[in-house]
Length: 310
Image (cartoon, rainbow, N blue to C red; front, side, top):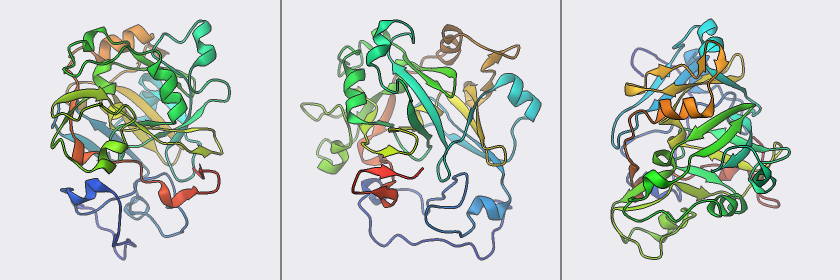
């Protein structure tokens, strides 16, 4: 990859799959960039053989624009501690952090008695390889009860609330532009593609707006599993540190430039953070239905109780 070379790299050839997106993929390989060895084996990963201990990912907001995967440090440790929010990695095979209080309302008040990830919380996988936000069905039902219907033409996008959640003690927000998508592509795509969407339309239409959520019902040693996929990376420039076993988050500015999550070493308020990430609203992200990539965790699931070792 570029000037980086890995000799005698172990790899696996896919000879059979049920991932519809791979039938239309423009890429030739899938590179796992987890914090440790791949699940079920001790072969060195590409990151290990390259000697990469830290990398960062950010996706630009406009539809069809480039994303950035940077292997190596993008900020000094002093700057990360001063300007970035951070979360401890609690997973062995995935970049997992604890998440609490997922709600469309501000994280205060009596309504928190009936919102996802209360009490012991949930396990949030921060995963650039998943197209949408994945969550348990009951949690998505709880969220839907707080959300007015999204009009198919996105004309009420400006009226929709902000999504709030807490990752390892830090409050995060995602605006409607992040959790609403404009679906494009063929109307008569395979049922398997439409089936992964939790909020299914009554009629399939080209160029319609939907919540960018998919259902994933599985538990783990850290609680119910959520996956914060590509929508998260369009608003948060994320550093993955294998050595310190931490993730660091900055606000994603123009051209994915990391902007301070903190002001003078203290966390900015939710309002300040929201104003920063919404400084240039871009509207909902357009997503081709055939390009949606679902979570690829099937080989790690214990089918008896739908649990996964993270």
